[in-house]
Amino acid sequence: MNKYEMGVVIRADLDEEAYRAEFDKVKGFIERFGGTIDKLDEWGKRKLAYPIQKMSEGVYTFITYSAESGTPKEVEARLRLQENVLRFLTIRKDENEVQKAEAVQAEPELAPEPTPEPEPEPAKTSEPAEAVEAEAVEE
Image (cartoon, rainbow, N blue to C red; front, side):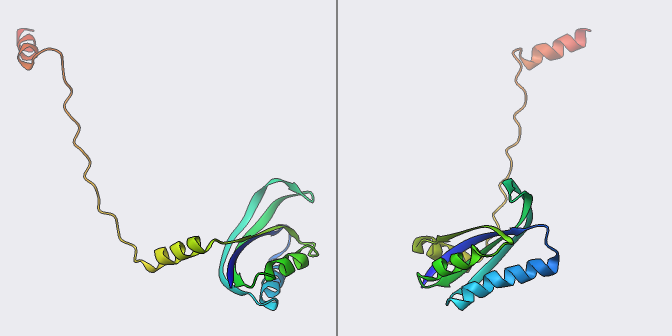
């Protein structure tokens, strides 16, 4: 099985119930064609870089899933027919990146040791300290 990441932008003017129904359809397409969803990353409502179908905002969601090689093609064919899906993009994740990401997640997070800040050096004057003190006494 291959790992894929799909970004989906859904219309922002939908109410919560309609958005959930549309998002459940997207997840259903992945599962219907043999994929298993590994991770969901919902970014929420964001401003689009340019208007799409006269919309200036969209709800961004990223789905990481495992599936056979034919699954993304089938899922994308179904997403093209969805009116409320503004844009989508599927990429295949590289095996090396997947292994590195899993290794990083498996390692416990260590708190970095605080580094002491260097003490500021005293300001250097061009005159010796004795001359400065002598001038101050004379005044």
